[in-house]
Amino acid sequence: MHSAYARVDLLPALPEQLPLIRRYLEQLATDEGVPQARGSDAFLMQTLFGRPPVAVAHLVQAQLVGEVAASFCGLAVHSWKWGTFSGVLDMYVHALVIAPSHRGQGLGKAVIAALFDIACAQGASRLELLTTAGNEAAAAFYDQQGLLEAKHMVVRRRACAGSPGRA
Image (cartoon, rainbow, N blue to C red; front, side, top):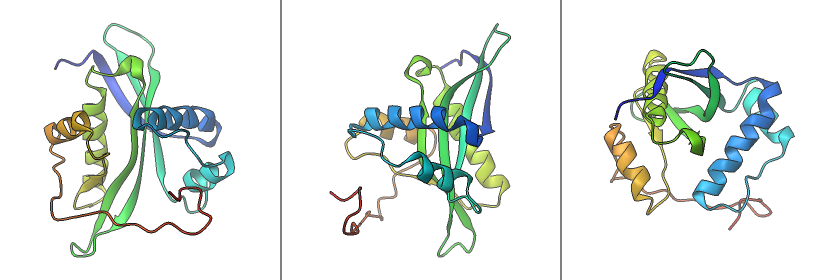
């Protein structure tokens, strides 16, 4: 696929961009069939911009071929996790969303490549993410990017009493 973009950048999100971050998270919730993106603005501020931040948010900015101005068109959120056996950090991607109007033009591929470059530059052993079971389009896309299913792993979880994510 030939990209329609002359330039794609991952820019560190700023606190004043929280409304834009929320819009992308709400889009992701819609895409995943989740009724709404939970988490107050205060929670997002603490998570993304607290000291220390729990996760790192990047806004995706792209410039179309032949255009002068670039525009925001997506969001990527990641954190670092301890590599139990590797002895180094791994990048865990929590969220990757591209605005519907910009999909199918190579942006997702460019964002994954940029995140992988960040992970490797920080000395990580790998980049990991979860996909929704049964989302064959996502599985195929990530397979094409070299993100293969870890068949030896199964996610297990137990919700805390009173947790808004409990279900």
